[in-house]
Amino acid sequence: MGLLDHPFDPSHEAALITGAGNGIGRAIAQALVGEGVRTVFADVNPETVTAAIKASARPDLAAPWVGDLADAAARERLLAEATGTLGTITHFVHSASPPRREADHALGVTTEVWARMHAVNLEAGFHLSRELARKLIAAKQPGSFLLLTSLHAGTPRNLPHYSTSKAGLAMLVKELAKTFGRFGIRVNALVPGAIAAGGFVADPALARHIPLGRLGEANDLAPLALAVLSNRVSAYVTGAAIVIDGGLSLTNWFAPPDLGDL
Image 1 (cartoon, rainbow, N blue to C red):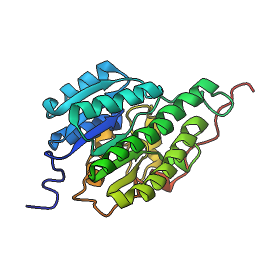
Image 2 (image 1 turned 30 degrees about the vertical axis):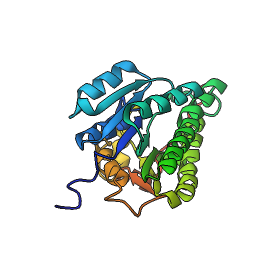
Image 3 (image 1 turned 90 degrees about the vertical axis):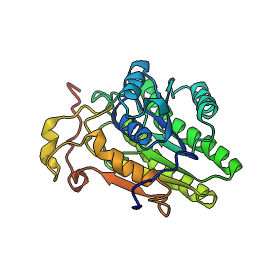
Image 4 (image 1 turned 60 degrees about the horizontal axis):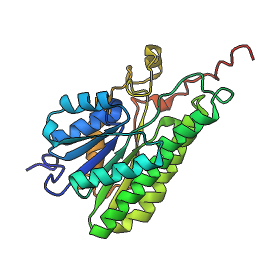
């Protein structure tokens, strides 16, 4: 049996994926059920969750959950329902993020849009990670968490609410990895580049800045995400930030924002 033949143990492992209705979260959730892992597909949109599960290789292993992670009560409901359905959650992927609009630059973003971005990206990521870790620690079980950050955790994107929330997530990964490592819980970041999925509306012209010559797709990230999540494949990897961007981070591609008539 090869090292990559059975990266998960479906008899003891279960997963929770946020943002599983579209984009990167959907690709990772579908890949996990394809490996036999019982998985909660969590998203704010019931139609996309249903479609994601229906299109997966093993719909019988997928459990839908619909709610708004900007709401603290919804986060508690997700934790209760996910564990009630699957038992102990050993693998967690936080991919949920509100849509981005180019108009939400530093002089355009509203207080409400700012707060929602931070609530879904950073606050939900922290709360869900911490509470899932508490359960794993109590059960004396190992786990593996993967938080989706961004190249813009370190490079301005003209969207300060988005970039600062992702920068916070990047440090959160390091904080949690340092704290939870002693309990066998690994925490890593997946750092996407220009992926034509989810909240990113891809401009095909961006491909000229990418050494590999094309925009990324959600399925470009799923195989490596599974490798990092796997306690068999990546047992000695924690606190890491794995960049999947086709080489885009080797360039600096964004001009300052258009401020209109200001």
